[in-house]
Length: 456
Ligand SMILES: Cc1ncc(COP(=O)(O)O)c(C=O)c1O
Image 1 (tube, rainbow, N blue to C red):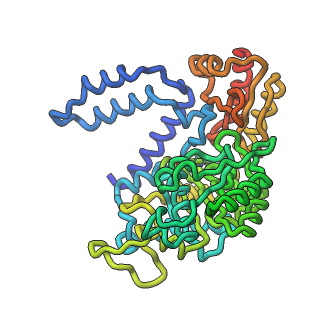
Image 2: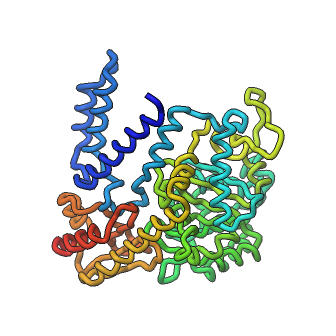
Image 3: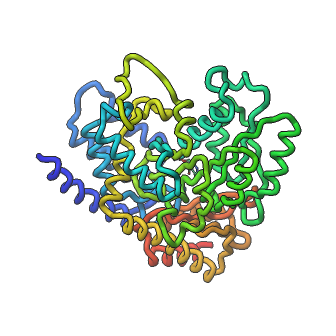
């Protein structure tokens, strides 16, 4: 069978699966022992099994025993419905298994990634000299940012480690920033206490006055502030920090300005939304995930950095067993990023963009934003109280006396929708619903709000 025929089959399989999932349950009710018993009874690996049978069994397990993040009524933690082109792309990648560690091993794949990243880099307003790479996700992109920022601020960090520094380096972010930075502080050796949590205003945006006070205090105490992280679309509430003010502060204080736009970054391509990301063009580095609002399968993050020299210094390595550097305007990703063996992550974004075109993607993003507005309005009309403020399709809400945990359990049990709870600024739990599927419709939302209101 030719690859083209196989893809035609894949198309119909995906279409069938999408409609099955949309018509089926969203949340499984299963205990670990049920799955373990099923696996133990069938798979002791002592004899070969028929691939069709195993495939069918695994498909049944996945259909039955997972939260269906591609369901139109999944309002979750940024996991999207995936475009058909991106599924085809992942299949192609598995078939060819290109190794992108060096340019010369996979020239086509490396250039496709470079081309795709250059498109988005231009949207962010970065110069063409900036460097970008695909990552496993936002956490790796944020880790890359901290490593590169440390390397640029403290040249001795690379060879002698943090213990060689005269002063303790400190990083500034708000309490609403992503918690990957706690792990990053841990793994880089900065230590979790090097993270300074800046106060937020009543809209949960970082308070630049408090940031300035903390940086000044730390300097007086002999610390070495080196980095500020602004978030463009916080995980809990979709809030965008005041990026222009943060950029200006960082410029005047000589601090690295990183923007974590893991989810919200995709808004840069929308004429309606991009104004909310103003200031991002002044960042030193940006995190943006393709596997969130660009609707491709995991894992596909992206790291953009304005300072290619600093990236090169942070990830430099020389070894005789890798092919030598290709002469000319190329780089070998294993010398400019954390990963060594490198999967062809970028094809899913490239293929989906090529299929839908930029206009198609803008429509997907703006549709979800409209659905966020519909959700907000429908909730308010039904007497719910909206407790966050975001231009993006993420709504946090509650109502008087709501037992949030009990309510969510009932919501799942009745298969009405998947959403989560969250505490904003340490307050009481509230409900959090993010429109993450480009297939969510107005009638999905109206039905969910009606059912939720009946349940509350
Ligand atoms: C703002 C933000 N940054 C970083 C991350 C981590 O991204 P990933 O899960 O792709 O590693 C997330 C995940 O939701 C996020 O919301």
